[in-house]
Image (cartoon, rainbow, N blue to C red; front, side, top):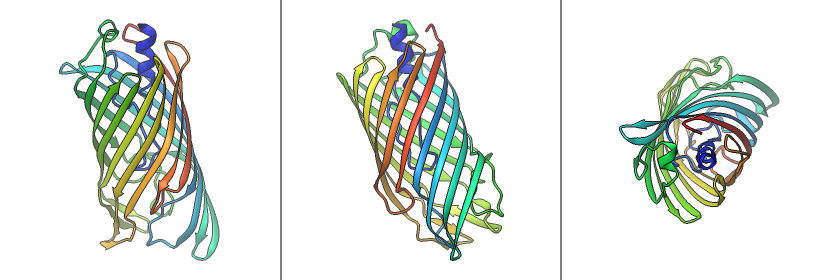
Length: 302
């Protein structure tokens, strides 16, 4: 019972690529025992095209981006429903190159990106349960909701074209529906990224961005408690930007596909591996992403 509860908690590990709309997050709305703590360390390597504002004179840009995240999370009861929160601190080491004003240019950046807070609660099918109750729980159809908040605390300098921080707030409310069918699980998420304005964009301009609608589909197969493989697919649309009121031709209509594998080591430790690539891209999503993560669980009777 303790092993099963712990590996489910470990499965909450989210390894999302740090660009709005591009997340692939299977098992993000799993029901888990309450009063447990979770520490996670993640690493993502992304290689491929870079999305720059079309108003800027950058062509044929490519990047190699190494992102590391540390996360603390806790499960809890929210008015009798299963809920959890997580705080993520991301650090990036990136190398970018391209043609800037007709000349080949290379840029390296290392530092803190915008940290993230995620709050999630199961609205239907997921009551708050201690570990003993969870042992007899058989999931069927669950409906959850979450909100993700990115705070403008990452490194930012308006005199630089390339920054790790965004100098704006970002919010993503989302609904997730999951259906368990024996060893199989089907998941569908629908959300939208909302952005405040960056009033100190490159050269002291104001940059606005339209919302980005985001959809995810996941099909999971469970080999044994805590060990599963997921086929992942997403689609996101929107995000047109304006700089000082002038609209850019940068509407995003992209999708990504990938695989995620969860491997429990014991009742407190687990590993997660993921790969994804651009399936359909119009702007800035033609990259390959390789991810791995480690999670450690304690408390909650485990």
